[in-house]
Image (cartoon, rainbow, N blue to C red; front, side):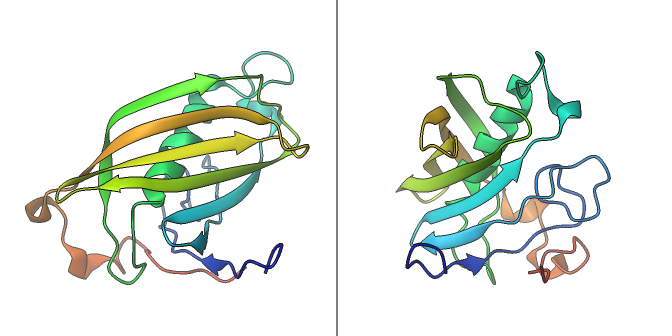
Length: 160
């Protein structure tokens, strides 16, 4: 529980760049549901992901925003809605620092039958919004993804 909010840990996969627990070069995010269509994580970027000295590379910033905006649309962790990104519009408001615990928040905006819109923001510990994105995510076609094989992907809630 953080600030009176019960946080429900979400599943990870084995090899996803952002959440994969076994990806040796990944970000290893632990993502928590904080309310309907709202998720949150914290991330402290290491120096080897910087662009300019002390500043997180914009591609990593975009990857964080992409993942979190889509995760907000996933719904029930036991029957997740897997989606791919159709459009990602990022606003880099301020430099995102490395070595600082960042708060990353995602919110589901609109959901349709085969697509959804999400928002994500990265916040400095002082509350300043550093970067944000809106994204259009499209359902992975059912014939290309076998939902019965989630175990093979390592799709589960891993203990902290």
